[in-house]
Image (cartoon, rainbow, N blue to C red; front, side, top):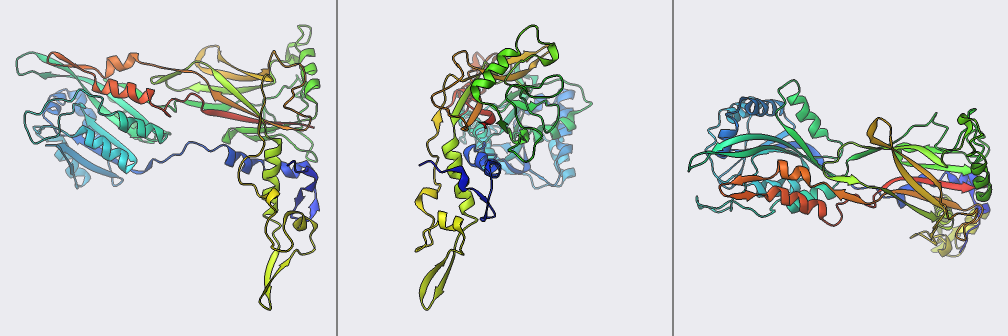
Length: 493
């Protein structure tokens, strides 16, 4: 059922125009665009591998320096554990005693329980550092237990990424003597189970700053990008502006407060553009200003632009392209706005002589929304789920173009599709369109995994961590493909 806009009101009493309806857009976007949950808790934990392999790692002065730096960085916010004999041992020590214990440790334990540690970190859900060679053994009491070569860490890495977390691996090389003679090339890892903001990494980097850099960093993440706008001002969006700052194409209202105005919520990754020109006119205006004879400052470039995507790290994935999803949300938004407004106009229900009495207060808008006998909200105004959202095809396209001199930064632009001829059967004049910019196809980067997470155990290759990373990046629900980057709401008047 279409709900007319004219029934909107302010304070449940005075009629207003569509401008008041738009005041519900922020709440509408919030409920229709759920963000990825951040379930990483507060506090920090550090886990020290106390097994004999670490003794050889810390014979390297630089690696021992790193151990000292991390240990010195712990404070009252940190819980500390030692790993050995298949056990996770709480180290309830003062900062000074913890430092002395870790630095003077003999490192003669066997079978540090790495998988059990991953399980505890993910279960507790707080930021944590594991310092280890990540060599996992069968967790039995036998001293002859064999090394695990399976991808034992997959589920823990996957669960952390699904929580919107990141995992950083600080990778260092060292050599361990073999029983049959010779040296085995191994890796020491500082594994950081971090939040999406890299707050734990910031602490570790502070601890290591100014020290010799003898490590490389690998970031396991599906949240490896930043999105931002670059507009002339907070009252100007990514729509076309000529040399004088005027929009002669879509005629977005950026100046007149008596009409629905442009809304910049770029910090929440959405905007609203009220266009005071019809779609066929907007296309004609754009075509007229593409001509080479138009001064460069006035020439039309894109319908929407100056939105930028920065790739901060491509260790895990490479974004190949972007996709666009366009929907007509006019009916749904109108229903939602009426429902929100109805909540402010509820009748007063009292009991008189044992009988329920509904007092509508003489308000015509309360009478519009509520049953006068029961006082309940009428079904047509009860918004429980989206209504009549129509997909709009062949109207817009999205492009991602790297900026000159900075391959990590790309500009995102929205333009009319080549198939658009001024009108679309799914769009009427005055309808609100929602344009969602999404991450498109992604490739997994496998190369660094071979360099950082594979080593030789005697005559056999240990790729347990590399395979765990592969499984994680291939797991359902982990790839960023299809993830929402930005939303534009556009309405013509």
